Length: 246
Image 1 (cartoon, helix red, strand yellow):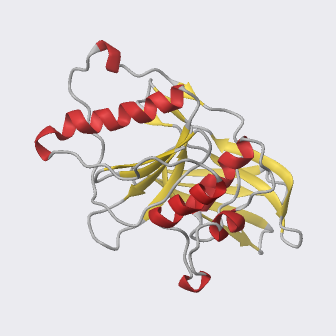
Image 2: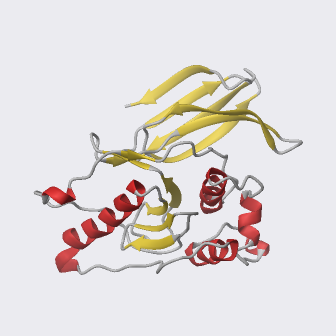
């Protein structure tokens, strides 16, 4: 496994075996040169059959590691066990930052490369392209990445880890998904496998609430564009209504 950070954008772990986290960095986004050399044209790629798990509070990095471990066949690993390998004091009442998640995946048995990178401001486009090309090359080779997206320039801005499993050349964007499953809270296990609600979405954050008045679940989220979405699900996970804020 390799771990990197896109300067000013994301931290990422390349997973020939698992994912990572972050706690600092500057706002920004990868830039692409107006005209790319032929060998820089990127093809669509998707690593499939990765099970979806529900993230525990502030455990987005740990959830990414769990999903990839389960993809590799290690079904006895969950987010709590990944957290335990980080050495982070539970009294901190938070999930792992990059340094702790790197420690966790190393303790699990992955080999991590350098976690952070920097680019020259004068050559930002070219050097950021190089970082993205490395991520895409790993996807083609079957290695997923965890990226930590930072949503603003302030020190206290929101961050979120994502497990990058593919790239859509037609849309020139990462491939994310929203999925739902049925969990038995007493046993802490899924009683119904996750169902994909949207397999091509780039979202900022989401939340789930049970609405007792109608005996349904409300899944709401905000896309990276600022537009919103909401799903109303019954107790079997079936979609009753879909709302989109354009």
